[in-house]
Length: 65
Image 1 (cartoon, rainbow, N blue to C red):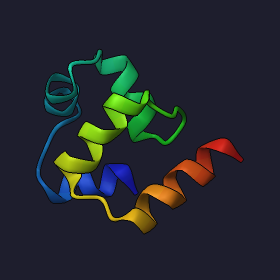
Image 2 (image 1 turned 135 degrees about the vertical axis):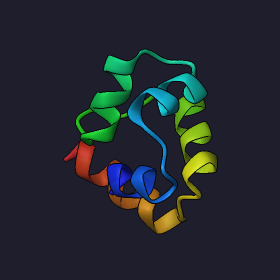
Image 3 (image 1 turned 45 degrees about the horizontal axis):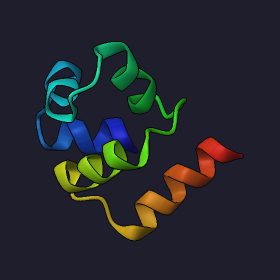
C-alpha cells in the first residue's frame, strides 16, 4: 500500500527518503512494509502520501502482526 501511494504521487524511493530525512535503506524497508517507522517519520509519511486513518491502521496492523 505504501509503495502504491508513493508511485501514485510519482515519488521515487530516494525522493521519499530525502523528504523524510532518513536513509534510502530505511525507507526501502518502510516501502516494502517490513518496518514501522518512528512516530515523527510516520507523521511525515502520512502527510506526504495523504494516507487515511484506515490505510495507516492497516499498515500498522500488517507490520505488528
